[in-house]
Length: 333
Image 1 (tube, rainbow, N blue to C red):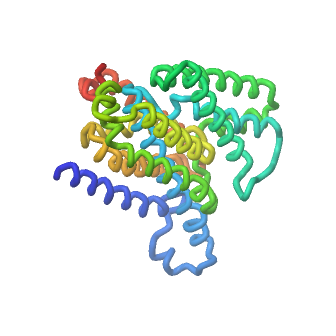
Image 2 (cartoon, rainbow, N blue to C red):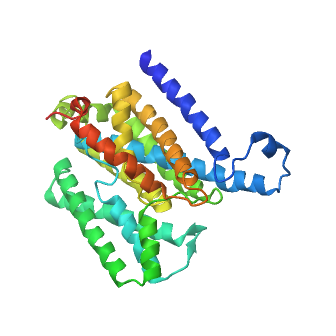
Image 3 (tube, rainbow, N blue to C red):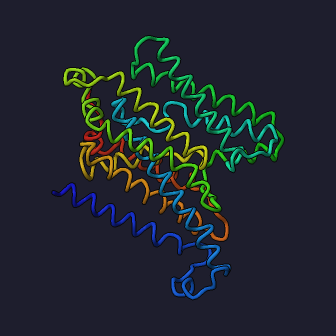
């Protein structure tokens, strides 16, 4: 009963944050002014065409990154696993860097070229990690983790090489994209991300029992009738594609996938039947709040939201490392 109450509280809090956040910004738009404004007024355009899509993009991205972090931490039984552990973020960043370096200016079915290239890079990283893991034999989480780290470092070195050979303007665009941001105009980013996040959520939902058992150990999961290899493959592809879809739109926004699952475990416990909805709701609200701070703290200048999450994530990581509470979050072998 307590867990259901916590989830209901998180749900109400998330809805409240999403409803309030669009009113905040360089200029606060009161509700009465918005209701009395003409449909084509500047205030109405700012609110409905810029702020509302941006808040929805943040909520969707936060939910996807947080859920991916929860899944990877349980699947790898590693408290430090994040949505970017398997090199998906580095692959997406490499794709975006190649696009900027090439000087192209294209769009595919209304999707910006940088998003297309970054998602292609994320897909390439997924294929490399999967291929290396299969070449080693089986589908070992250790091999997958090491392959992801290796691919991540290799792609990161290629990004540095591209930055070195780029001119100053292109190099700045790459650095700015790598900071992560939610500069959404219109609802296209929401529409582009939604299929990946929804598909990932559905697949993880139907694998919650297997995820609960995998977090206790692969041998225990197999003894309880779970097809560990099949479950890990499903979770790997679902979460990786979800991360690729988010990063291709927003860039690599760090620490959401590490902080949020840990906080939710402290609040609601390790049972994924309750942890999953709590993580989705908390992740949505958290990134919306971070983005609201990013666009209001130094107004009229907007700070990339990735800087805010990193500033919060660093101290949280140190606290997690030193606090006795962290012992409750470490998966014991």
